[in-house]
Amino acid sequence: LVPVYVPCDASMSRLYGALACILGLIALIWYRVFIGLPIEPSVVPSVCEYLTGFVDYVLTVDTYHPTSEASHLYLELARSIYRSNHVGPGDSLASKDITKHFSSECLRHVNMTKLDSVCEYLNMLRRSFLCPRADVTLPISPHTPRPLNTTMKDIVIVGAGPSGLLSALVSYSSIPLREGDTIPVRIYEKRSPFTRDIWFDLVSEPWSSSVYNLTAWGWMIQQGLNHKVIQHTNTTIISTSSQMVERFLTKIVNILGMDVHYNTSFISLTPSSGDHGNQYVANFMDSVGQLHGVPCSMLVGADGARSRVRDSLHSLFGDTSSSAFVVQDRFTLASSSAGKKHVPGIHQAALLINFRPDATDGSCPKIATDKKGQPYGAWQPSFFVKGVSSVWKRFYPGHCQMQVLFTHEYGKQLVLKYDTMKQHSPSQHTVATHHDEWQDAAIPWTTILDVMRVVLNPPPPSVSKLQLMVARRPYTPSQFDLSIFKIEIAKAAHVLSVPSSESHTPFIGWLAGDAALTAHFRLGIGINNVFNSMNDAGQLISAWVGVHLHMDSTASEDLHAALAWFRTRSEVRANAMVDFQLSAMYYEAYCGLAISFNVSRPIVSVPLEVHAPNKDYFDFTNLG
Image 1 (spheres, rainbow, N blue to C red):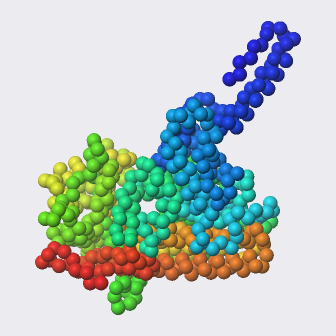
Image 2 (cartoon, rainbow, N blue to C red):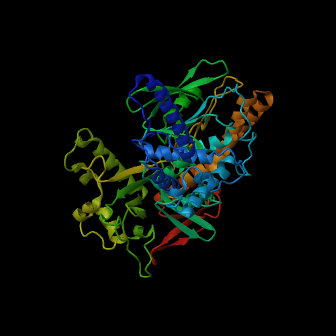
């Protein structure tokens, strides 16, 4: 605010008015340059509060809210510090790069150790994304100036789960940008932010590169993570939720300069005329029903097992006489000399049940232990409960999920009964007000109670008490938060799609995550496999960018080689994952055996270990 005395004399009002405007403009420029805040008094905290909020935003995983004005302010400062012009890509940021934005009065109230941690986090991102890892060979330097006449349109990524966000990060690392360039990567997500609540295990190398990458990107210094770190000999396992990983990766994507458009659904991909080769438009619908067309040169489908991107790519470039997504039933049986097996309709039935966390501390029901004080193993309930193969507990503060896997014959009957009764239930078509009676008949409550008598201490004494322990669905409170379904492994007919017509600047579509290959949640390979595949995607994107930059025969040959490499690598990895998952399902659901993994070997080597039940000791014997 600039106080200015304006006299009543009209002849002087213009002079004083001009002076007020000049002084106000000087104050505005000073405020933006030295304080670094946009002028929005209704939403901006005080400068010192802003510094504290900024530190919390950078160091805490769950502080970013896309609709929060304060979050946007913190993000803009983080972006400007990350991109500091005077610091080269290989140089480190220092605390002064942050403190210069604030007065000494504010700095007196801030923990300088936290500021150092902010610098450490941003330096981790700079080392990872401004200076790519040495073992990732990129045909083009990520910082080669991009010509103004480039024909490259946006890279459009559909899906903001871990697969989509990782695709965005590898795209960013593979595109050369000049200072001031708009990052040509757009991310769209049909859901609201951070609503997935799936838990998984991230395993260190050589099984997967997930733990290595997350650690390099600052996972271990983030506060507010709901996770559990398990340390074995030469192996680290991080158990966490998809929501935590999404929050963590979204913050990185945002700081690097990319935004996620939520509540926006992919509709279709359509060709359009263009002056430079193949041109396509990705069509979206936002939350108010407005249609948007986004020109793109690359489309990434990371939109899950029911991928619309996969269907669009298949209808444009695939063989429409065949399916875009094929359920797998042929596999090479691991740890066996039987070779290739064909098991029509192979699947495994599963029950997911969410218990109510304790209202005071968020704790879960207590787990029963054996005589040695150890929790019962996942397969031990199979000795006591007919039809049950294994029981897996995802019990963390505020999240109490149990996963029950069934034998083939018993599980097939459960799924058929559950699906039939659910389909014909009136509550599927009308809003229920109290309780859905179809669940009483469709759910095997007696079997579940028998399982709880083995794994919980104390167990519920009756079915009615068990039902009181089960949570209700958030959007359908008349239903128990419990579901029965069959797990099948399906693979995309084509992970990579390219128009058949020759073009110097081709369009490319490719699939990531469950859109390319579904994963059995119990085997923990889905997210780990996505991390492992990102290097291949980086090489593909780099070669594709090279064609748009140079448009010569050498770049075109590099791209054709990269396309062949990506297809081969994707097929080899997908086939290994099919063998891995179907072998495990076959041994457990069809043969009554138990499976464990040798995480000291890569996933693609299908490192399964088979165990046979020993009823004398209620345990399993390793068969190798």
